[in-house]
Length: 273
Image (cartoon, rainbow, N blue to C red; front, side):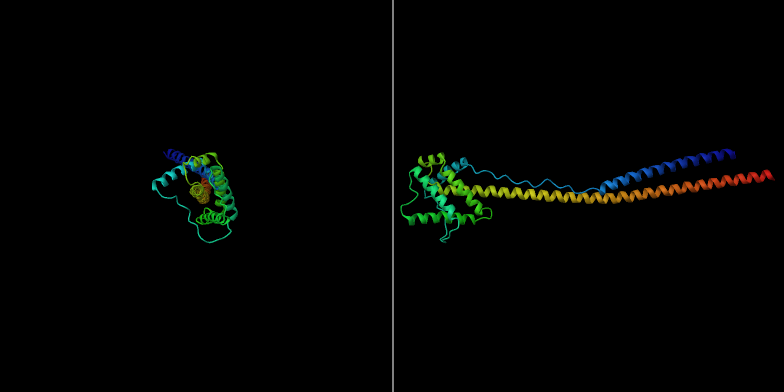
């Protein structure tokens, strides 16, 4: 009976030791995995987002201009009044004088094509007209931060191109429109403002996207660093558990050896007696 109890006791001890060895192996494996994971997480660095794209400014088309001129003529005819003339300040300056001169010459060439004298024989009248064009350019350019000198250069080029276009000339010759020169610049002004506003909106959206992606990357890296610290703490805990169980097995082994030595000594003593 005593022998059966001892055998059963040894069986349970073996099972317990196997369980301890299994836990030690799992702890060692977990420690290695956690250390590798911590190293990977610590190596994380923020990825640079795709560069902000620049908006493509839409082209201002002559087809849209022709439609604008025709619709404006219908509105003006419905009002039954004279076409509105641009309001220009009385201040005399030389700003945009060169661009105004280019527009004046283009308008003069257009007048010759349609049989309307834009350039007067009176130099004083021509100077007044030139000043009106220049004043319109200056007041319009100063009317918005989206315009400035770039708009002046663009409107001068667009207006001269439009005045030289055969279809625009035909509209005037066929008397489908009465006023062309200032309405062209007015159309370009509206289209320019719309396009530039869209460009600013797009550029701002791209800047916000880049900033948002950078913030998200910074947050991701910070989370990775925090996870690395947790993994290292867990690895340290797994290592501590492994060492604790190893010490337990060592102590159990020493105890078992001492017990066997004690039994051997007792048996030798009994035989000697």
